[in-house]
Image 1 (cartoon, helix red, strand yellow):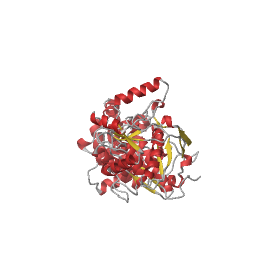
Image 2: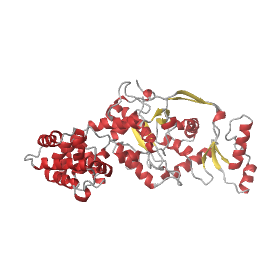
Image 3: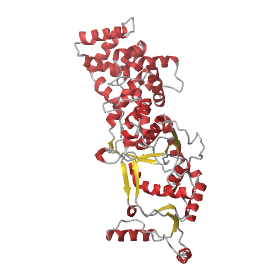
Image 4: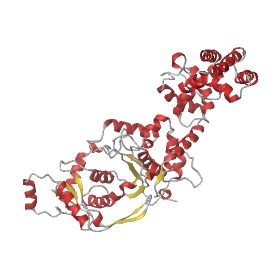
Length: 497
């Protein structure tokens, strides 16, 4: 299956606003645009829509860049890369928008509107009461010079409002098929505030036109703005802005959260930073996000980004809402984690172990060797990289830095039975001449299972808590070998009281 409208060079854009924390819906949109561009050998433009000075922040902008880089997206044009259509931050392009607004006014494709907010609301309420569509009613479309002068003398400062065409607008959505909007439902809209500040409704289509964007893939929530933008594209071509080409639109399905409602950026499972902090692999998270509206095959959920790029077509995007399932995201991430080469897994664990204070800024050769030996022991048990802190921290901490889980210690080691097990384990292991996994297992089974008559689960849980600090750890006998005889015996002796 091929994508329509890709005979010429593909240029797509991803244009988030730097407000708040990046969310999974944003990443899904970036992914589909990136995969579409890479599949067609096109250009992926990264643009920052930061025209809302009250909400935009430099911290959010920096976070956006970090998250895009963490996820592994490479952009052909945009911040820190540059390109022929720079600058790529809209806050740096205000003179461009002012010039375009002036051209539209002079061509009669836009006009000054002096209506107050109260007047607009009153007329919309009246329209509803009369069964007419609410929205701007064209009150200032054809003011006389005297009327404009009267408004000006009264101190009113006008907005710039776009004059929508008086006919239906139809377009072929790449995801949803043919869609028609009647003029009654697409009233004239504001391009520039009364203070001269341009709005999204102007800057987004202007930049798309000037940057020669061929395809716009974005969320379903922006579908209602598409007829407005198509009308504006025609006007921009008339006043000499851009090439006159109208992009093809494809509106991606909603991502739904719990309770069958649209996933909000305020929902905990929506926060991309949380997934990075937990230790999701970028490729694991992107694999799952790709499934929110697209499938590489009916019977396949696991794939690499290279495989996605090779297979990605808009024709396979499902228009129906997609439900975000955290458990499935975790399962897919675990599958990717298990497929990592041991050396790479160990390397990816290091930042999490360092952030937790388990490893220092410089990893010694001995620590690296121990981590390489331990990684295969936990690879099948881990869901995220962050779990390496609890699972492997005991191998790299000593003295006051080694802290046992309070609940486990109070339950298992606080009883005389628990201490008896630990003392027996200490005695059996002290006598070992060879500190190897097989010898450790033989000694502990002989002392605890055969001589004390304990079931393995009861026999080894106290030893596990004593030496690792937790009920759940890598395999016990291998862990003891990696920990070393001296350190293991010291922890058993301390736990025995």
